[in-house]
Amino acid sequence: MKTPPGISPSVFANALTEFVAVVGKEWVFSSDEDVALYRDAYSPLQGTDEDRWASAAVAPASAEEVQAIVKIANRRQIPLYAISTGKNLGYGGSAPNYSGSVVVDLKRMNRIIEVNESNCFAIVEPGVSYFDLYNYIQERKLNVWLDVPDPGWGSLVGNALDHGVGHTASRFRNHFDAHCGMEVVLANGEMLRTGMGAMPNSKTWAQYKMGFGPILDGLFSQSNMGIVTKMGFWLMPKPEAFMHAVVMAPRYDDLHPLVETLKYVENLSIAPGPPELGSPLLGAGGETKSLVDMFYNGPPKMDKQQMDLVAVSKLGFSSALQQYGLDNGIPYWSLNLTFYGPAKVIAAQWEAVQDIANAAIKGAKFSNGAILTDAQDAASKQLIYPQNVGVPNLEFFAFGSRAGGNPQPANGHMWFSPVIPQTAEGIFEANRVFDEATRTIPLLQNLPMFNLRPFSLPSPFHERAFLFILGFPILDDPAVNKSIISAFRELIRIGAEHGWGEYRTPSIFQDQVMGTYSFNDNMLRRVNETIKDALDPNGILSPGRYGIWPKGMRGAAK
Image (cartoon, rainbow, N blue to C red; front, side):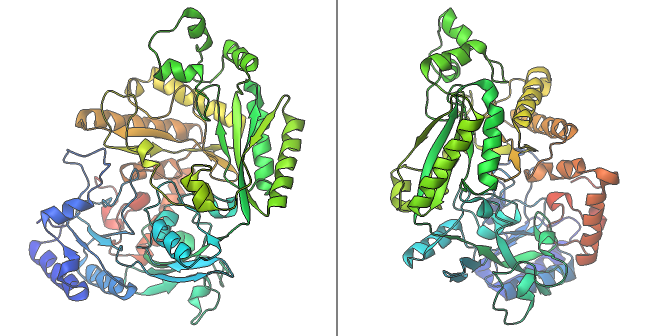
């Protein structure tokens, strides 16, 4: 059995004995076989001595048990690392940032405390997954919807604290913004409630975010200031109907007015559902099997005329290809939209979107599906993307866990996710910069990536910015993975040079990314450290998470 750094075997054994007294012998894990389950299944460090590891794990069943565990750890200075369900694959999984930490596994804390149909909120514990809450709602036939991320097996609490996003109306897609009130166990074992939850017998915990005085909730997202044990969330009222529709633009330069249309209709809630940009002509989205898609993935031999047509740069423009699209009715760009509400409101909103797009884009075309009313039926029949109607599933992992077309199978993935301006210029510049990097920087050449050819379009999860997401597969070869890590670090550096910071990143890159938010001699990090030292002077809670290290570990190899 390994012990945390600086902790003697006898002190650690005594701590485990005390943990057993709190949760029971069956919920303290210290064997090599059990603890191995808390490694990151998608770790790019797998097979190396640098891979992150836990010394043990403990699984409490209540907030009171979390308090007792934290008090023991604080007294004995045992580092802890809290996880909700541990499904954070691609961003570190359940492995601690600081090797040797004891994982506090909150999966047993899976109570759905309340779902209020009238005021559309839920209060849940960290072990409640999207599937859990969805099934609870369906079984009781409640008239509310969840907003779910791509993989539905994760925790509502964990996803929100990591700034995860989903797929329904804009006011619910940013999961931390959609939370309302939380309960937190601090490093000394005391319990804090934020917002209206700070009032005993509060009747509005999950209805009014602010409470009284400073809003503290943000201290506990992407941080290590406490362990969240309950959290409120706003849910979406179940709409009468919903509909998917597409705006199509014929020319390369039409991306400019198309993005402006996207922003206008979303920010006015004319089209409240998740927008999605695609390019049927480039094969970057939509259902059209374009010539470019055929060039990269189809028959190996093409005649000269076909090759001329697909001689498209990573910036996505070829005059011959554009003309081919115009001649054959294949749009250069598409904007997918989803509408929710009464059927007659949806019809009016879609009519308004068409008027707006027609005024901005010459030759715009439109298509729409039927106005539907049954989310489960529409999702099961693939009439609409299931997550767009609040139905969780795991289909996304079919993409994220394999390297299609690459010579070696992938064992997982990592996402490089910088935030870029919500403009066509921002899209073109990001493609230009990262295309140049992959063509000219040795570290980035010949490495497998999921989605950087021939042109990458961003994900409009947020109302005022784009996420430009590139996928890196994790392979079975430590030497290749080492190169992938170096390439990932280079893209972080390049993105920061252009003012594009990552919104979220795998744990091994969190120190570097925090270092890119360096205004005024890294004031953001220094303030985080000041707060950390005040709330957690012994530095026991998740050392290093999101680049926040306790005083005794700063400057050490991490």
